[in-house]
Structure formats: C-alpha cells, structure tokens
Amino acid sequence: MDNTIITIFVVVAAVAIVLQAGILFALYKALRQTSERMEGIAGRLEQQAAPVLTTAAAILEDAKPKIAEITTNLAETSASVRVHVAQVGEATTEIVERARLQVARLDEFVVSAAQKVEATSEMLQHKVFSPMRRVRAVVTALNAGLAFFKANRSRQRHNSESVEDEEMFI
Image (cartoon, rainbow, N blue to C red; front, side):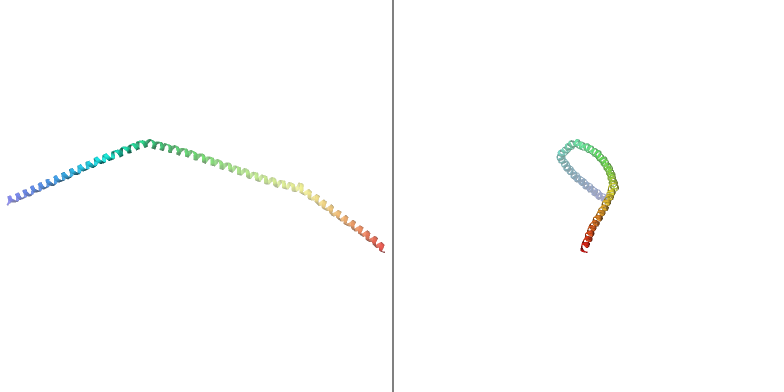
C-alpha cells in the first residue's frame, strides 16, 4: 500500500506535470500567434504612419520659419502700437491743454468785451445822454414857454377883439 500510494502519487504528479507542460505549450503557441499578429499590425501601422509622419514633419519644418516670422511681426506690431498709443495719448493731452487755454482766453475776451461795453454804455449815459436830456429839457421848456406866449398872444388878441366888440356893442 505504501508502494501503491507512492505510485499513484507519482502517476498523478506525472500527469499534472504533463498537463502543465501542455498548458505551457498552448500558452507559448498563443503568445507566439499574438506576437506575430502584433508584429504584422505594427508593420502595417508603420507603413501607413510613415508617410503621415513624414508629411507632418515636412509641414512643421516648412511652418517653423513662418511661425518665427509671425511671432517677430507680432512683437514688432505690438511695440509699434504701444508707441502710437503713447503718441496719441500725448497728442490728446496737448489738445486738451490747448483747448483749456483757448477757453480761458475766450473767457477773458468775453469778460473784457462785457466790461468795455459796460464802460462805453456808462460813458454814453454821462457824456451823451445826460447833455441830450438837458438840451431836451431846455427845448421842452422853450416849447412850453413859446406855447404859453402863443396862447397868451391868442388870448390877448381874442381879449382885445372882444373888448373892441364890446366897445362897439355898447
């Protein structure tokens, strides 16, 4: 029995080892087929990707100087825009300052003109209109006096005629 158990154990172990060898061989075959397939796919991928990669590399090589030029132009344009904006800012400041000075001058001119008009008006009042009022008052007084004398003369004539009429009537 001891021998039989050992024999059975040896047979079972041998069968297990053969079974493991078979499984390992099957794994080897499957792995080999998968490896061959992967190599085929990699080869086809390399054949198809090689022209695309070559074209992409050529496009990048061609675009590299253009991109550098665009970057340089953009930097120059940005610097130029900054300079022009600064100049426009300075010009705007100068224009505003000049406008402010012109407004101040115009204000001074208007104030001066108003003062001169006022002074001229006062001078006309005192130098021209006051004497004219006096002359007018004198003329009015003369007219009133002449009217009074004229009215008195008419009355005297009328009175003398009435006296004559009365004397004739009597």
